[in-house]
Length: 576
Ligand code: OXT
Ligand code: ADP
Ligand code: MG
Image (cartoon, rainbow, N blue to C red; front, side):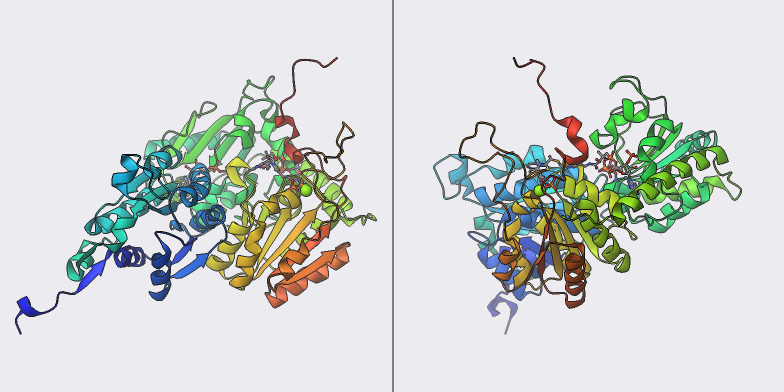
């Protein structure tokens, strides 16, 4: 037989998408099926990919985003058109805001009809809507361009400052057939998707000079430092310099929180007192009071405190975004930190003892105060007595992943529960967004294989609570602890009018959240005491069974917005 008469082997858009992703090492998909991606999910599974199917796209998107943070590879979320796409978009925007690599792949409707606005099924110009909310957005119209489309999406997500990428795949694309060999040849294996960016030697020297002259230096580690996976070098930098460091929330555990140089327990002392601050993958945004104001020892909220700043960041435009940066160090954190280490030489002088002693004194005082509070066992469980248990459980299981959201449930957990290893604490991030909980918990279990503990405010849990079914369906080792105080911040508010409606801030009292887990075959536990909570958590870790513990917390224990009460606006117009 000649080649002319041999039947041509064909491939199609479905398989090219799958092959392109697999070629680039992407094998986990977080999504929700429906027109036009239903078959794609089936085929992905058939081709050996792990498809985790959620109950709402926002949770799938959050899972993809945090998978990106954990692995440094883009997490992929797959949705249907218009409403499914929009449901996933919040997570894509959140990923971009947090600098996490993620790709949202959405099916879309017939281009010809959408562009003429003729009212197609789920009609929407998704590409245009996604563009301002992510780092890059692409659409693929022809099967032979799928390889390029996916390569561009991967590169855009992970190179430079990581972020979210939208990839629009119209329904018609999936069915397009082409020659299999030509299809294979059209795929691209992305080489060096996140190239190292070596800092300029003069910038390294400028930073070292500033650090050398400091009397009260401080290192601030942000989640960019955790993301960079330069753990050993970062630890060496901290230890060799002898400088106290402060981890931002998701950088906790980069060095163990129990490290003697950790200044976490002296935060409000070290920020205004420091004279030179080195930011490592942390932005001077609202979480750091924009680098000025009272937090930094400034007179008014617009006044700087007089600190000199070194900022290590991959984004060349980050410096000076809030206050002047004296020594910007632009490059990837791994390269910048190793350049600093090389420049420090072998006889780097530790900071003056006076500074180290002052930090230690303040820290020890706060740690002792905390220990005293944690030792109390009030008649009704509160944040301290319950989180003391979580603290012990994490200490005994340092490889476990910790997911955390809420207001008081977030802030108390952050300061009470020590972390021991990098990238183990996953939380509300830059936006302080509620709803990340169950999506993060699913991805944390899938990506790490470790047990996951999700500490959830009862309000926070409500945003993604239906995913307990997903957790049960995939039999994931997730232990959810709901800090149940009957409401947003507190559960004791009343309707001031005396009317029948409850206050906007409270929920059904004594809600039995644990029954939600039981409905899907998981383990539900009601815990009224620290002892009950401890037993239930230990059992959950041991059994690896999906577990939901409804921890009943004193409904008067919380404060408005937790530690960020001051961000609530107050009216300048006095009421009579
Ligand atoms: O130095 P000082 O003395 O100041 O003490 C500090 C440390 O030194 C000390 N510390 C320690 N002491 C001893 N030992 C150790 N180890 C130690 N470590 C620390 O403790 C204190 C505090 O330390 P910290 O935390 O480091 O310092 P500080 O000053 O707090 O740090 C400042 C910040 C800004 C960095 C920090 O506070 C922070 O990271 N905050 C994040 C806040 C945040 O993001 N909050 C979430 C948003 S709140 C709100 O928006 C909510 N909503 C609205 C909503 C949202 N968000 N999203 C969506 C989609 N829709 C609506 C809602 C609905 S929260 C919320 C639900 C709330 O209800 P829940 O039921 O879920 O939760 P509950 O409140 O529990 O009811
Ligand atoms: P945090 O909330 O913990 O303070 P941010 O999200 O504000 O952290 O800051 C993270 C910073 O880290 C961003 O400015 C981002 O550009 C930077 N970043 C992320 N990855 C890297 C990397 N590999 N190398 C250098 N900088 C990075
Ligand atoms: Mg609550």
